[in-house]
Amino acid sequence: MAARVTTAEEAAALVRDGDNVGISGFTGAGYPKALPTALAARMRAAHERGEQFRVGLWSGASTAPEADGVLAEAHGISKRLPYSSDPTLRREINDGEVEYVDAHLSHSAQHMWFGFYGHLDVAVVEVTAVLPNGLLVPSSSVGNNKTWLDRADKVILEVNHWQPRELEGFHDVYHGTRLPPFRAPIQLTDPLQRIGEPYLRVDPAKVVAIVETDAPDRNSPLAAPDDDARAMAAHLVDFLRHEVARGRMPANLLPLQSGVGNVANAVMAGLLDSEFEQLTSFTEVIQDGLLDLLDAGKLVGVSATSFGLSPTGVRRFMDDVGSYKGRILLRSEEISNHPELVRRLGVIAINGMIEADVYGNVNSTHVMGSSIMNGIGGSGDFARNAYLNFFVSPSTAKGGAISSIVPFASHVDHTEHDVQVLVTEQGLADLRGLSPSARADVVIDRCAHPAFRDQLRDYVGRARRERPHARHTPHLLAEALSWHQRYLDTGSMQAAPTPEEGRG
Image 1: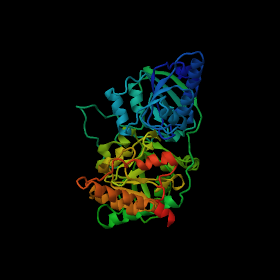
Image 2: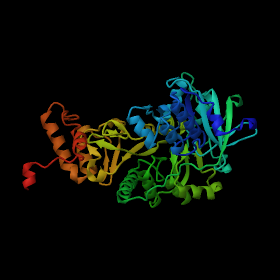
Image 3: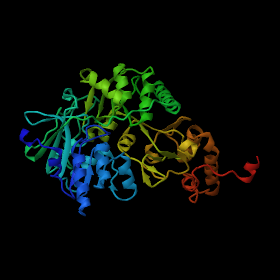
Image 4: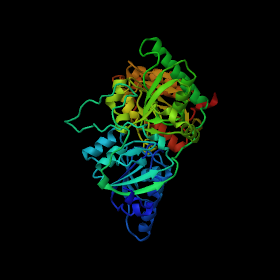
């Protein structure tokens, strides 16, 4: 393959208008660093000549400004899937310029195999090394790379020398998935069990270019936990204590999954200060909080599909990479997020939300019902199949103008049937075994901010009275989304005081 080493510009010339391009990358780790910039330059030049040049862009999850960002700025993306967090691309999606397929991450690889997304023309995959026998050492994420390498007509590899060569051995790539009706059980019964091999495979005949790079991942800093995040972590950890005391899980809990972001990281910090020992994790992304638990000896090991460390976390990992071998496994996302495995292992799932309604429906993707924020990611994979799931959020946003607990969620990603526990800084609502109407009282009393509780109680009370034969999930249809409309009209979900309240 040495004869195929070339420049990013020459490699980018192999991508054509209308191609579907599968790139590596998951949560800002392991994405191609050079080719997207070179491709974006070609797109801008074509547009200046009056020519169209856009591609369908598929990945494992979010990438970085050097990938999603530069291609969006060049107006070169026609369709994006299955997840994105880039602000420029988000604006183009919400403006209708880019089609966005917001898929469960466990579905993305198999839907591509099923042919739902069309044909994959080019794969652009970052690796740590190409071995003499042609096997590929993956880099800091695996994501959908196996599928892209298997299915693409042409493959462009980026060998990133910034990625530590010691990453060889950190990965477990399973090549045994099959399409129906030939599927077989996946023989994994422990988070740290190996069922695959440490390498990616590729047909050498498909490799049309290799680009060498030396550039870091997008290592975004994590904010220190604030009072709200610490309160949510405390509620959640205390609830886990009660579950252990009631005999519902062992003293070392069950495998942990946490979503990406500051709140999820704060929950891991809460576990660091707890009495729990010998923990395990079966998750998507390794953030600093999981690294802290590993370093403290609280966490035996973690299975994920990607790193998502801060700059400080990256330095810690790089400085002592050898000590983590055998305690960290990176898998393809079709395994890290596989419903069969999440259910078998009995995962405890902890994910963020934008809002929840009083009956337990959760919106994790859309602002005011229509504007996409990032995407559902893997939260649905874990929440529906977990032994126990939590959705966490501060009770208000925008300086108190928005309540995260509303009469009816403006978009529903996780229905009331899939939501077990809601957590805000105000408290925790255990919804298991409760009817929708009973849930409403618990959610309002324990999770809603005091500034909005009376409004919520008023809504539910009037719905029960005015719809006496619809009390299972009572709604006032003319008002169900009125809080969101009020925010759009006035900049606040708070209702204007009545004349009597004003005089009081």
